[in-house]
Image (cartoon, rainbow, N blue to C red; front, top):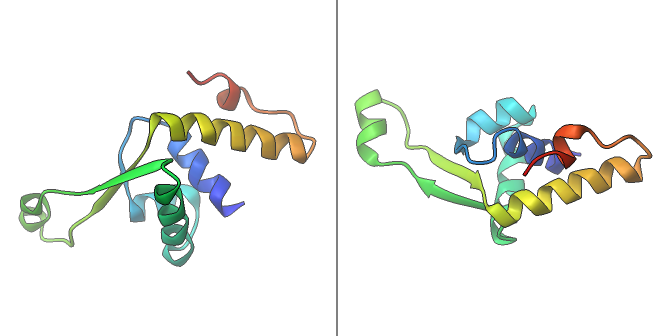
Length: 101
């Protein structure tokens, strides 16, 4: 279920980059749960990440952020995985899962 929450957060707006703490909030997960999931998704090629430009965080006086984005293939695989999870629980697959391009 935690991995599905992360995938749903990415599928909400696939092209959008999100940083870790933002994903924690959207997925409703603590960082200790989120970051291992992100590492696995990145190793699988579903997610890619990048560090922000150091000038941005220095100017704002905060720690440097690592941004994550679902890949095109990852988005498709995520849709299929979430849909399969709904089917396995014998629930109707939401339109936002199957209706995405």
